[in-house]
Length: 224
Image 1 (cartoon, rainbow, N blue to C red):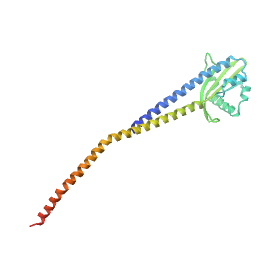
Image 2 (image 1 turned 30 degrees about the horizontal axis):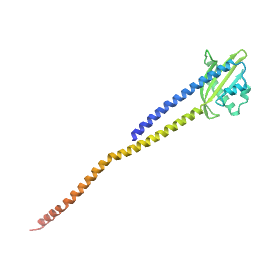
Image 3 (image 1 turned 180 degrees about the horizontal axis):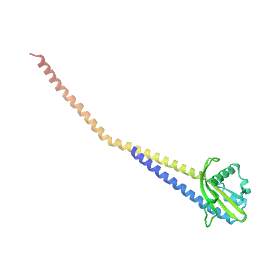
Image 4 (image 1 turned 90 degrees about the vertical axis):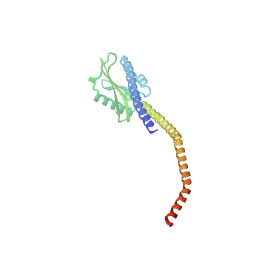
């Protein structure tokens, strides 16, 4: 049972690692695809309204910051202080690790870079996208952030489910092994019991003639 449970736990952990890696890769790919659509829409629009940007942020799912020639739009200034600090932190990380001149060129999208960074402000991990659109009036810098907390919650629930399944399976294996080991030991215990009974009966049967022999030998030893 112990060996079987150990193999079960190792295989479960291996599958869980592969599954989590796949979930992270799929989520990052989804972020890249959705960001591509947002960047395409932003590039096609001549005027970006606060209402459109608020709708694009999808009820807190994304944080979007746009700077026109290094000047923040009004939409940026209307954000909460914590979101402003988070965006500044993400912009600093992007500029440090991905300078504007290293941004990837795409035939259909502006120059852009996707990345993952850990925020000290929110104590969370975020997906990020830094993009640059060049127009006649100058350059537009776009920063899009998306929290990985929903994915992390999904991963934690996944781990809890695996822990519950492994615990239940280990308990079932232990009870199964306990029951059938007991069934296997019953014939051995019965054989040992019968052996002890035979030895006790033989000892009882041999005690009387041995006592007679010993007494006779004692008389012969002491007699003339």
